[in-house]
Length: 208
Image 1 (tube, rainbow, N blue to C red):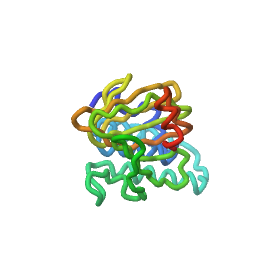
Image 2 (image 1 turned 180 degrees about the vertical axis):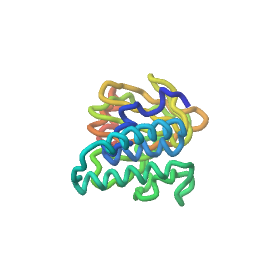
Image 3 (image 1 turned 90 degrees about the vertical axis):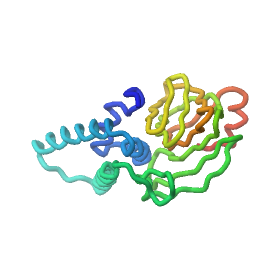
Image 4 (image 1 turned 60 degrees about the vertical axis):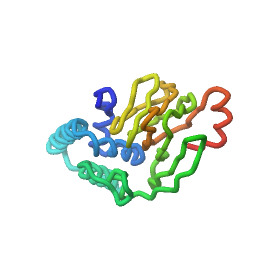
């Protein structure tokens, strides 16, 4: 796993201190469950934050902030390898309701992940071997953790456990591994903006 395919320091620090939207945090937690190096980095941020809090004056926290911190702490605890009762799913997904798989194109299926109260929309995507996804960009964030298989695009190849952190500055055309296919979990904010004639045809059908 390449260091370039792990969360940025800013992302891990925000996760460690409970400042991420829960939808985005779930995708980070899924990566952490599979990557020991990122877990060590995240824990170092938690240690620094703990030292800072020890020297600060106590302040009252809102219920919302307390709940978010609790969920992030629970996600951080569940980052040792393991699976939920549904075969092949990361254990960190256990508390969430998963919708049925539904086709959104030839060789591509999507299922929603219900993360109540999250700003980000979370879903799993499954694509067959060799499938090319339409060229697209984003008006917000698109964070992805690869669960199995692999894909590649203009910024490199991403395999199982890798974290793909894209924002409105990125445009890409993911192409799925020609042998393994790919299954991933993603969280997006803003709009996914498909480009080209095929993308414009798909735009009304794919409501991410």
